[in-house]
Structures are given as C-alpha cells and as structure tokens.
Image (cartoon, rainbow, N blue to C red):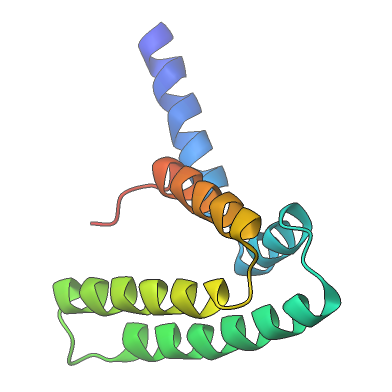
Amino acid sequence: MTGIIAGAAMAQDQKETKTDPKEWDKKVKTELDLTADQVTKYDAISLEYSGKMDAIMKDANLTKEVQKEKKMALKKEKQTRLFEFFTPEQQTKYTEMMDKRKATKPKET
C-alpha cells in the first residue's frame, strides 16, 4: 500500500513541477532580484525564445529527436544571452534554479 501512495505522490510532484512559463519568469525575476532594466531585457529575450520554441514544436517535418536537439540548443543560446546582463551572483543562482528545475522535471519521451 505504501508503494502505491509513494507512486501517487511522485506522480503528483511531477505534475506540479511542470512550471507555467509565466510563473517561471516571475520566479526568476524575484529570486534573482532583477533590476528594472534587467526585467525589460529578460522579458524581450523570453518572448523571442518562446516564439522560436513554438516554431520548433509546430514543425511537423522534425523528428522528436531533432526537436529535442534544437530545443536544447535554443536553451543554451538563451542562457548565453541572459548571462550577458546577469551579474555573476545572478548567473550562479540562475544555474542552480535551472539544475533544480531539470532534476524535478518529468523526462520527455
């Protein structure tokens, strides 16, 4: 019986870790204590990369594997752009947040 409860709890945790992009952006801005200028830049980059991600997801010519590769490349590119205006402390905190997010995110199939 405990295994079933633990399994259900894990499944619930995994559902809850699928973060809404708006919630994630709010968390990043708050936890990194971004300045008004940084928020403006962050929002512009997030919007740009959101559009690029959507285009990849909607491209029926791409296999799941190619989609995944392209998404990973975009995530790295986005992080590089963000780090251009994040302080070293913010970069460290952002990296920790991303690592934690990856660790709790359900695996894609």
